[in-house]
Image (cartoon, rainbow, N blue to C red; front, side, top):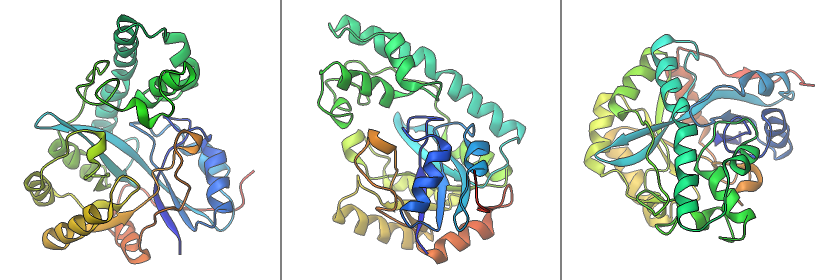
Length: 285
């Protein structure tokens, strides 16, 4: 089995619609794909409606957190999307995304960059707006050559000249909320140092004690040394190890299935989940 547990659609900052994502996942030879858009579940229905026969969909989300002033992302899988407490927290985070993006536009304008909110809104296309949309605007304007080049201290990285903070959940509270909604929690790309400061290992140990299920190890932003260190940490803490592409369509160069999760780990995730079930494809439209 080929299993990719971290993918984005136009419901947040990917460039494939949810329907296109599942069709592309099947064409890439995947058996299981997770839809994990940022702080939203809006793409579920379209993905399920187009799900090809032979492909299983794991519903999830990549949720924004902050601990000790460090921004981090938590992958939540197979939770009940209508559970009131978790839904309310997701809405708080999502609703803060628009004023945050407008704040980044204002900072960029003050730096002499002629980006506009209308441009960012067009790029987002109705999705959950975020920094990648602002970064894409910088690419369109020729300010930076790629989206990744916008995530530097000069521009949009944490603490960068045009960075604006947003509402982010305490990860310990988020773990509690996801568990109460029947979901499974995996810390996304915990050693992605090029994105900014990373969460220290003692905090990950505390999260493991609080119910964290796993850490994403095999990821494009982790070099071989980081992966080896994270595998050792996962073994020490009794955490599951996942791998995934963090696919964003044409917004990033990584391909679907570039990194995958072991079928036994996937089986354990589904066994632990109580809020939702994986959806088997029956031949979508």
